[in-house]
Image 1 (spheres, rainbow, N blue to C red):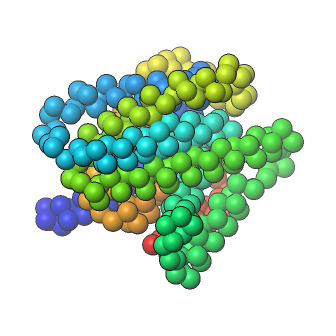
Image 2 (cartoon, helix red, strand yellow):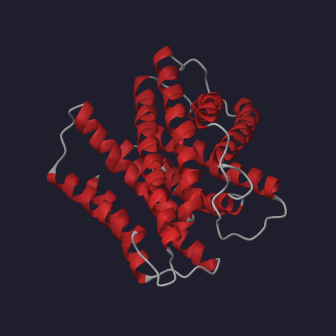
Image 3 (cartoon, rainbow, N blue to C red):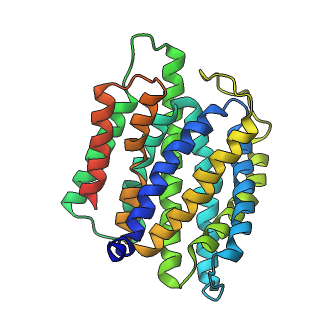
Length: 301
C-alpha cells in the first residue's frame, strides 16, 4: 500500500491541490467585497511567502539544483501565473462566483496545448482537438446558462467575468508550462520553487497596481458581510496558496505535465457539492457541463 501511494504521489498531490483550491475559492469569494483583486492577490502572496519561509528550513530541500535557467523559468512562471493569473482569477471570482470561476480554469490545459502547437510546433492528435472542443463546449454551456431573474447587468458581469476567467486560465497555463520546463532542466525542490514563484509574483504586483491606477469601485456582489475578513484571508491563503501551490509543484515535479494538469483542474467537481452544501441551487445543466469539461481534458491527455 505504501509503495502504491509513493508511486502515485504526484497524482495524489494534484487531487489534494484541486480539493483545497475549491475550498479556498469559497473563502476568497466571501472576502471579495473587502479587498480589491490586486490587493487581495498581493496580501495572499505576502502571507504565503512568510509561510514558505517558515517551512523551508524544515523541508530538507537542497539548494544546489537552482541553476540560472531554472530560476529564470520559475520567476517568469510566478509573474505570469501568480502575478497576472491570480489577479485575473479574483476579478473573475467577483463576477462569476466560485463555481463558474473554478470551471473557467479547465481551459488552462487546452490553452497550454494550443500555445505549444503555435509556438513550439508540437503536434496534436485528432483526439486532443476533440477533447479541447468538448471542454470548451462544456464551459460555454455552463457560463451561458441564464435564469429568468437574471438582469441585463448580471449578464454583463458574466460576460466580463468570462473574459477575466479566460485570461486567468491562459496565465495559469503559461505558468504551468514554465514550471514544468524548470523541473525538466534541473533537480529543484517543490517548496523552494513555490517560494521563487511567489517572490516573482509579489515583485510584479506594484507594477500591475501602477498600471491599473486607482482601484475602481468593487463589483456589487451578493455576499453576506464578513466580520473577520483578515482571519478568512489567512486561512484561505494557507490552504489555497501555501499548501495548494506546494502540492502543485510536487505534482508537476513527480508526474507527467499532462496528468498533473488534468487532475489539477478537477476543482469544479469538488466545487459542485461544496456549493450545494452552502445552499446554492445547482442545475443539471451545470453538472453535465462540468463533467463534459473534465471529460474533455481527460480525453485530451
